[in-house]
Each structure stands twice: as structure tokens, then as C-alpha cells.
Amino acid sequence: MNSKNTLFYVCKYYKKRIHINLFKFQFCSGIVSILPLPMKTFIARLHNALEYQLYNLFLTDISECERLKSAIKYSKKALRILKRYISCCFFENMEDEIWFFKHAKPSFYSKFIYYVNLYNFHIKKPTGSEEAIMEYIAVQLADLKRFFDRNQVFYQYYRSDSTHLDSIYFTRNCTDVYLEPEDFHGDDLFSTSHDYKLSKIIANKKFQEYLIDQTKKVSCETGANENPVVWTCNQTDLVELIYALKETGAINNGNIEIKSLIDYFEVVFKVDLKHYYRKYADMACRKKERTVFLDRLKTSLIRKMDSKYELEQPELKRITFR
Image (cartoon, rainbow, N blue to C red; front, side, top):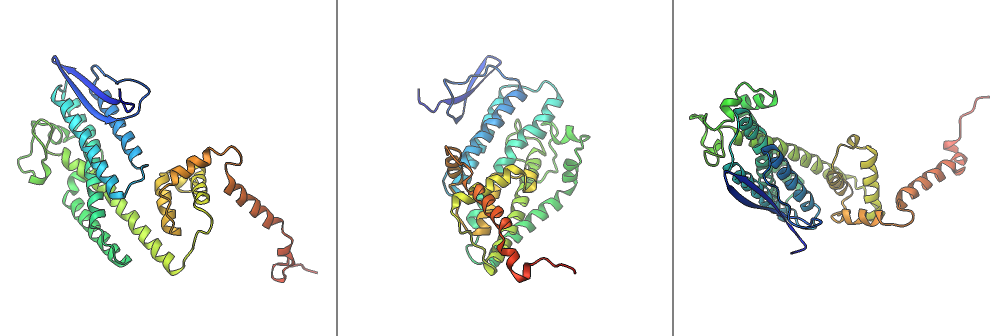
């Protein structure tokens, strides 16, 4: 058997057996078979498998566009698996059907839409000045605002955790005949009148946050050009510092992904840290003095505090009263 074993979800309903090839992972041994799984258990495992694959993908050393293309492929594959699973089973009650189309399916579909948005953003992004990039982002944000304004009623329904219209929005026998054509995607067995719209709201909200973050980065980069601040130590030292800030909760109380911190420091100091995970792994494997840079920072600061030279300078002498 190939060293990269394949994860199979095996479902058996009504004497039907479906082998679903999800993704290739490296497991300890053998093929993982699940016969059969309750709906929520199956969906939780499928979602975890997708998250695991995406996590590994964003650690790979490839271009951003290639990474996003792969993320789209994985998300689409997970949706296909989800569709095949639902096609061979039935919902025991309306509550299960609502849960699937209100929570389960949008958690996968929103990822697909989000990565498509990111991919389109990157391939169409201008390569000119900061002003051109800011204008491009502003147009994207304006489009998103129009989307949320156009769907304000349903957006408020979702944000307020309302449930009184769930049986209309998230069951398959209640398709809205007045629905906009773009809001109905897929076949009748795998779609309701509003699961796609909800997925799009979730994806667009996340995309909006990404664009706002990009705006801050461009602004920060513009300021750095006017008053350049350059990192003059080596890149490993910077990676060590960033990981320390993350683990101590010094930034956003620790509620920030390490990749986001890396991206921020790359912009601020104009350095390329695309191999940061390898540098961190090298640091973790050091046999002695694993925090070389942090130790050096501490030593340098204490030396300055202990220095008598500062007090010997006239402008720093203590003021005394006689």
C-alpha cells in the first residue's frame, strides 16, 4: 500500500455501499472505514478532514494563487462528498433537515465561495501604486456593502439567530418562487431557497474582514515608505520574536493566527518570511539556548539599565534640590 494512505468514508444505507475518496493523508496504518455513521458525526469528521487539509496546504511553499486554487479544489471535493452522503440517506425529522441546510452545508459551501473570492481578488489585483490598490479594494468593499444592503432582512434574521422562518428557508419543499435566480444553486435534493444565500453571507463577511485587513496593510506599507524602519537582524530572530509575542498573548490577547502575525511583520519590515515554519522548527530542535534572540534581548536591556554611562550624561543626571 502506498505510504500516503487514503481516507475512505464508507456509508451503508438501504443496502447501498458508497466508497468516498476524500483526501490523501499520512496515517499510522491502513484504510480508515466507518460503517455507518450518524449524520452529525459524519459531517463533523468530514469538516475536520477538510480543515486539516487546508491547514497543511497553507503551510506549503507555493504561490498564493496556487494555494487558493488548491483550497477551492479541496472545498469543492468536500461538497461533492457531502452531496453523495445526503443522496443515500434521509432526514428523520424536519429539525435534522433544517440543521443540515442552515449549519452543516453552509460551513462547507461558505469556504468554497470565500476561496473563490480570494482567488479572483488576487488575480485581478493591480500591480501599480498603493493608491491603485486602495482604489481596487474600495471597489470590492463597495460591492460587498451593496450585497449586504440588498439582503439586509435575511442578514438580520441570520445575525439575530432567529428560527421562526427556518422551516421555509431551510427545507427543500418550500422553495421560494420569488427567489432571485442567482440565489438558487444545485439540484432540488441538495438545495433549499436560502442555504446558498446564507453561505454567501458567511463567505462575504469573512472576505470583507480580509479586505479591511488588506487596507490596513497597504496603509502601513505606505507609512513605512515615508519613514522606513528596517529589520537588521536575521530572519530567524524575527520569527523567534513573532512566535514569542503570539504565545504570550501580547497581541490581540493571543487571538490571532501566526500566519496573520507573519504577514503583518512582513509588511512592516519589508522582509520575506515565507519559510517561517521551517525556521521555527529549526529553533525548536536546538539542543542548547533555543531562544537565542530573546536571551540576547534580555541581556542587552539589562546591560543598558545597569549602565552608568547614562547617568554620566548631563541631560540625564538626576535633578536634586539643595
